[in-house]
Image 1 (cartoon, rainbow, N blue to C red):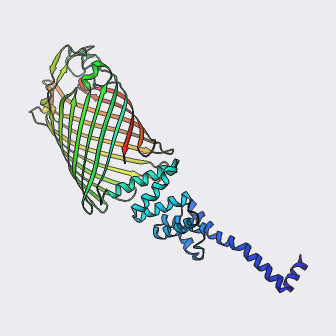
Image 2: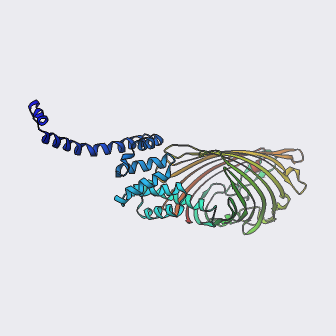
Length: 463
């Protein structure tokens, strides 16, 4: 070996040839080293360090492998302009690389070039599967939401479903009514006896916005829904609802302000039963990408209509409901907090507190009440596409006057636990299952009940 090296050193031609061969061998390795460094830092979640390492080796720019990883690092480090240029260089040589095309589309989105981002994401969508498809859908939805600030937008949906409710009328078990004098009974067969049944639901809605000036928009929407029961004797509890809303919203930096009017019309058994007219004011503050706070105030005028009802399930005794004595005005204040966590399951936690005062307008203080409530909920996505949710709600109602002479004022404690699972079949179709357990405790037995409901719904969204 030593003799061979000595001969190389003694022969300039041989030595030059050896050096040339060695340089040719090491050049690809030298070019790959910066790319490997950037890749390693990216995989460790150190985007800024990866970008800095790439900037420290400017001679590597133009190498396809380096451009690919450096482009992603620049996007993640907050330098999208350089990232887009690097990815475009890479795609000139490898135009079919889906990962590079996705990252380039993401770069356009970060730069605010929504049209180019949409074109890239849309071209990738037909062949996308799994996580890539989910990400593309989220970006396209985000583009549409962002466009609402400078051009008119609208979305609509239709939904059908069905399920079972163990207590469709919030009824109670037969027997002596707790909290009332002896002799106040619920008899078997009466309409207020607990009754379960299968039900079907259908709903459709539309909402949109129209920009008036930078950050200032008009918004509006409409909802039509119905719930119908299977058993003939249950149709007296069928419901239909019409909801309308409209107002003005103002986006100012991290703050969103909204003022509007909501109208709701509820019909029971094809009879107009309740009209709600609400003035709504809301403030939202986005502290950072993880935390959002909001405060909303509602002032609601509630007008009830008398409807024909039956005292028994056989519909043999028909009477007027006398519901008009429940007319009231409700003032309600709600504060909420939403927290997004950085985790593979994309958890989002939300919580809310509310206080309110419901004043009867028909000189019935026994129907006036003070209320307060709380809710906590969380959604997670442990596997691709599946989103699971769970929530717990509580509301306390304390009435202002005796329920009847010699009978204490009514006191209600309402608890609700809910579960949901949503699976988006594609960009437009989604299926959702819902379960809810409700328990209301009351010192007046007429209003103490429990119910379980389970439903499955299929939804189509026009996008």
